[in-house]
Length: 308
Length: 308
Image (cartoon, rainbow over all chains, first blue to last red; front, side, top):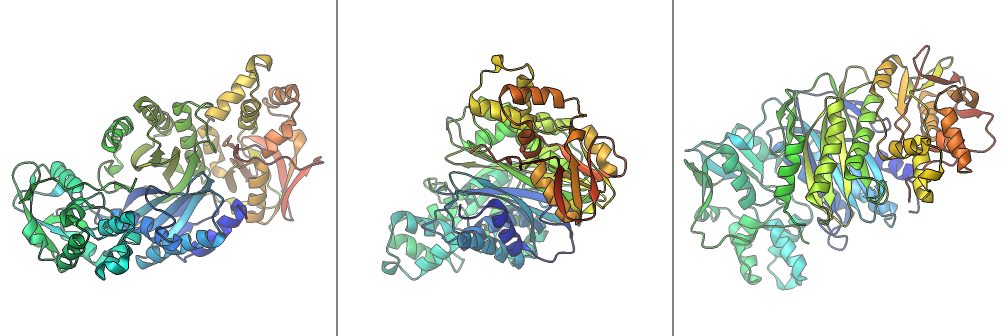
């Protein structure tokens, strides 16, 4: 490294410095101390170089945004509001200070959007870059995965699949100029997925809620089992979303099955919620029974895995 | 990996399952939800394979204990009580399930000792094992590094240096049977340092406090600057500790300077505290001025770095 640990910490601290009345002790002591509002929600998400991100595919800024959105989405998925972030970061020593600062700025970009602040962290050396972020949030009554009941409806905050589409383009090394213009949107959503805070707030009256970042298939199944009921998704309902047309156009241009992206793709940070009358994309019904069932599905979609 | 992510999570969850009335939502949802007591203290510590631990030097159990102690010590150093742990873990896929479970059992061993519980985490694949742990604690009034004043005394919870001694033995590949019997103690303390909870509680009336796990030199300097005063350590006072004799005997047997271990060694998780009349090893006085000064010191000790 062209600079020592203390210099990196100083530089990061200056990016992360945000006035925050809830922070009693910030960066620079053994630990941070924050004043809680209600119950404390806590989640962690780890992103590993060449598993969750590639330096030739994403900028430091986008990598910072993406790991932050992943953490914040888990907080919102509990019906909670994010308050604070803690960052454990390993660096190889080959990074430039500018790369490190851009990572921090990407984190701050997303944290600022939701009024959260970075209050501490740890820095380590490693053979790869690993970012382990922990997010704290506050909630009075959490929305769990297990709260759904038969005769409720299933909603999504938007159509998932864009991030998986972007990943397909990058994995294939496709020339974006030969693809429909929406290919660029897919790449952007892969690089830094958008956290839909407004929709997360709209879902506060849901009976159950989940960030389906490991794919709708995987986490729909988890919600159905946690709630002990049967989730029946109707694929024709997905087609009502304005994004369906451009996404299926992109998929067919690439000779891929759009349902692998929609049902099997991950990292969009779309919220799935259940209830009687929510604002969002209505995609199915809950019945008595158990598990996830998809109307009109002949084969199970390829479930999303990180790109290795 | 001989098992998939879901199997590892299930196995880890069963080790981490601890009845805890403060946990409203535990492992298995998007995030955990805990009920705070007072203000929330949060710290994170990252341990990287071949930087912070080596598989041929430490068992999975010891590695789990050590990373947990590192996190808990930072909580105690704020005058706080640990409550919850969150674990982000990357695995290479070459680990046996038994190794992973032993890691979890080591974590639980230390967590149980202090009444903390593991409430969540994330699992990733990587080219090396990286353990990023985040600890939460509760405190009413935190003890900061900046609270020391001139005319107070400086105390340690015990004599630091044992972990550095153990590291020296391992780095040198020394035959332990040719060394004094205390060499075994040094190895044990390197592998899983002891968290002195009782002494941490005794230090609750301190004006400032710090876990000097990056070395007494480094963190004494930080405390002195944070508190804007001069810390004067007297080396003859260290000799009053019962561990001084065996430690200097071991150092001279290895032809090493014991002060490199005591002043420059890390990872003992000894607490340094300031005040008028604390129970502990009295090692110096605070005066007006700035910085860390060591009476009778001709050369600066080699400051501790992780073993790469």
